[in-house]
Length: 379
Image (cartoon, rainbow, N blue to C red; front, side):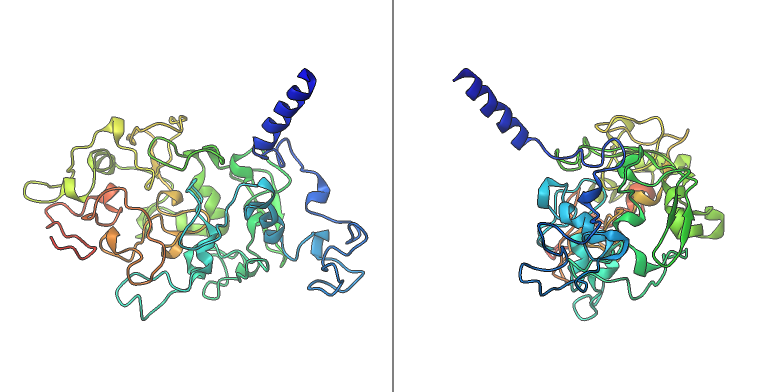
């Protein structure tokens, strides 16, 4: 009886534990993604039980001996939430997954994410919500407006999960490609990776991202993104927003003091304004890169020594309900306008109903403004 109870207890623990070691320690088991002969249990894997499709003709398989039509579908077989994999694609565009940093691909399914002026009559489809990965399983297609990565030459028609992540395993953050690797897209576009993105990530099966539970970015972020997006990360001397550059003393001061529009508006509030302090300044919606911060619970703000603005300071890596994978909607004046005209998911507002764009966390352009309830409740 004692042995039986022990076995039952062990089984309960195993069933409750998340299955997160599939890629750990290098190459995962090959038949998780590939099939040598396009058959399993005496049936072609690309056909249903009746042998009538959809799929490739009997006796043939998908490219690269994959078990699904495209590389994203192989990943989504587990990461859409099946088979205990970490879920990156929710079931409902209005109920996304708890945010863990990268964003949710479900927003690619939206019919409208435009909450700017005239958003209801000038819809912007979900392909503009972020990296529009090609997935037959989810019905998403290549971005029709950007045939190549903005600022670069990576073909949108080849964009999938494995464009950025190495399914065979790496030692880098979230299995991202790293220095010394070479990748070749289906159409032959080659990347010789000479950058490794350095970061410490929060647990994928733990609590949602917050100011006290967040990814920590330590180095190489903008340079890594530039492998596909080219000179979009270049110096601000070219009259574009800087990325990968040290924050100026003024921006550091603003970031650390800013605690929302309500705290920075009205008479006497000129930038840098606000009652915030370095010790509690961190805002998960506007992260920064700093090699000295390694604790994912740190609430410290940036400093002038080596804190940097990087691509993920403003963008999600996967997708969001804002255009261009924005961490907040860049096309609206107040955050409470988000989702109003489009009917799309409203990105949570970290402050209150008077909050203007989160660009102000670094730039504080709302000083001296009159407080307005952008949800329509008056001022």
